[in-house]
Image (cartoon, rainbow, N blue to C red):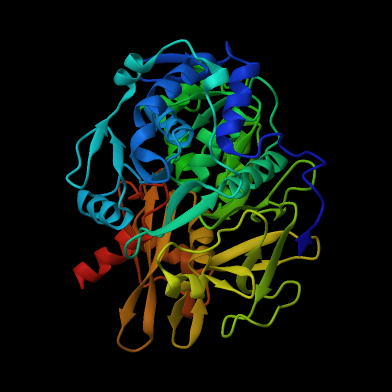
Length: 500
């Protein structure tokens, strides 16, 4: 399935993301740009702080990598754009990574300087946080704020993986980032004066899109929570006039709906609720719309290329699907064995993608690149189907398939069923080694009302063929989450190994 039309005839004026910010600052200097822990900055004030930091960094960072290790914050936004205006290449390292992982990533990156809120043992650290941004404020001289980069220069080094092994560097050019922004706006069409509330880390492709890149297209405002805490998010949605909630994975929406404040809260300005990062159970869609009157517009993407597909009001919404391909993007389903045979409508196989916003490869990882990039496509490792209308449905991760006595069991099918149980608020199904059947499914769940394992297993028995039955249901007080806000499937899998 290929969408060849341009994004509704619309293309961004700027060729680089730094230039896109400068255009927004020139045209809307008094518009609110961001609201962080220490106050609010207009576009003009942010431009002045960016200019100050860029002037400080320029002599050292031109043509070299700069590591950004900061939480979502005003400081992150200033650091990112200052690095670009100084001629450096920003590498976005998740602030939530363990220290050992950060040290390895810094060793691998060879950054000339690290911009962070605390010292790092590898290389030189320039301490920066929201309070210190105050010292950078000065009247902006926009005529002298010059973007030295071109469309072909790297606008961001992101990291893919991270739940298994060391994350891989994924460099994205300005041209790819601009194409990403255009396709995000095609799917979640924005207006002037939007107020964005991002939750996912800005170092994650989804958080980068929702909190850093797309808000500047029409000089929107970004409200930055100090942390993800469901009661706080509910308060901000209500009090800050938020129009776009960059919620992210289903676990985030589930957590917000679990807040004691949610039932009585009203969000009169809210109009767009994007979703992505993991497939959404139908239960989450239905509960959110019943509570707010708003649809979650689910999309699909990955660090290597995003967005790939989006449910949109203009082009159709199919609950349970990830939507239709974004413009100029080819989505195909291929066989799991060789990845060479394109499958027909409704047939399940691996999803492969190509488009103008895809990565060129992993830095210094030719073996990984050869696996992910073949025949001009990114091979996603996800399993899915395409229907006759072009809607993509993701059934599972290729690596998550559970093999029970020769049968394939897809965790998402079981997770959807478990969420249909009235007492279950979240579910995750992983595999456990079994001496006779090879593997068996084990279900982890959290509850919204009282229930026990026996009752849940009885519910499963009424709805599943024998080989798909969970061998065990483990009830948790809350689901572990990755730094990107997804359910930490690896942690749950590892807990079973530890128990064994």
